[in-house]
Length: 330
Image (cartoon, rainbow, N blue to C red; front, side, top):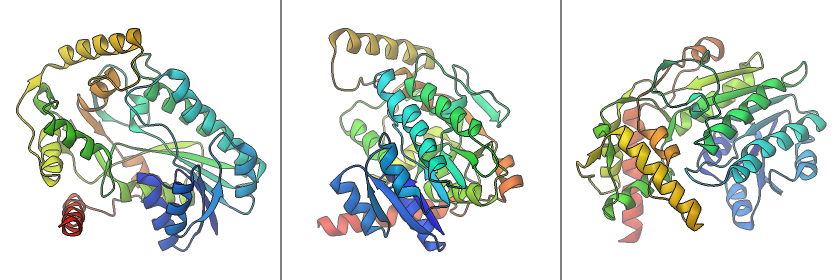
């Protein structure tokens, strides 16, 4: 059976292609650039050159596929609403339209737990929590709108579903190296000392859950995906940073102060039309500055989901990857 994957050259997409192939699927992957094409080809996927706005190209690429796994999208803490809307909403609309035209049977989107975030901490959230479109975060708002479109597109003969991972981690993650660089530059600071509970999802568990959704979902559903255990945010991030070779300082500011400083920074960047990213944004503060406890009970009961990578084995893999890189450099 053939599966069409968007975002195959990224962190999650890389793992998705590998896992699909390991489970016997043939994979076709959308590639926007020559570099992306080389990478997905190296992973064993057939390359379809184009991007999320190339509906005709995607339609042709999907014609012999039974499943689409839509991973691509814009994940950033800064940018214009229009940029996020084009990537996350219009891109999803066109991917859905291409899949329908190509008579694809199943469509699964890798969404985000952030789609239910507003100003409040999330404790024991499940899929009954309403989707949010907060004005302070184009990322959260557009991921929520994209999910709505996917779920609404479900119909007989065209099953759609969304999986919502929390903080995705694992080998190939780009967020932790960026945080490590902030520590080295003296720009890292905790929010509320990092003393809150948080949900994470290893990248392999994300891909496993998405494949199960394609195989088993009844359609028109969203599912939170999580690792088997919760973490204390400060301890968790410190562990990941120490694997990168740095230890964060103890500096911390209250959440409310972080929020105000982020608003000030955003305003300054907008007024001065700076092209780089502010050191603090409200999206960043919201995503990692408060408690996040998610229930994956629905995925477990309806899809038979259980994590396939434990925290211990995932961390061991990160250490091995680091050691291999250091060995290559020495």
